[in-house]
Amino acid sequence: MNGVVKLTDDKGKATRYTRKIGRMGNSLGVSLPKSLAKMLNVSQGDEIEFVENDRGEVVLKKVRHGKLPDGVRPEVLEAFFDVFEEDEGILEDLRDR
Image 1 (cartoon, rainbow, N blue to C red):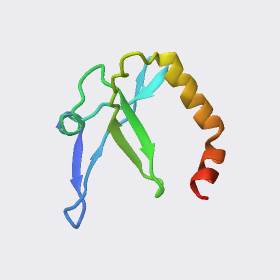
Image 2 (cartoon, one colour):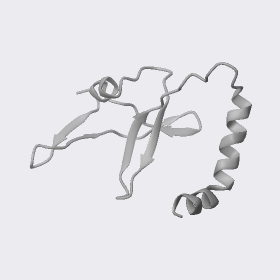
Image 3 (cartoon, one colour):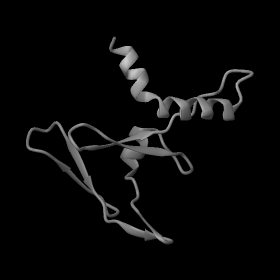
Image 4 (cartoon, rainbow, N blue to C red):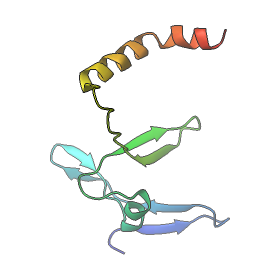
C-alpha cells in the first residue's frame, strides 16, 4: 500500500489515512495518497491550505488563485487586504448595526 493505511470508521462514513512524517530538507513533510490528491485535484507544484475549523479539525483545500480584473494591480489588492485586516473590528461593528 506504499506506506498508506486506509481505515474506515465503524459507521462507514469517514475514511482515514495515516502517513508517517518525514524530513524534507530542514522541514517536516508528509505525502498525500494518490486517492486524496485526486480528490483534491492537486498535482506537483499546486498549493494546498490547511484550515482549522471551529471543532479543532484541520481541513485540506486546494488553493484557488483567481485572476485579477483588468486594471487592478496586485499591490493595490494587497493594500486593500491590509487595511481590511487592520479595520476588521470596525467593519464588523458597522455590519452589526
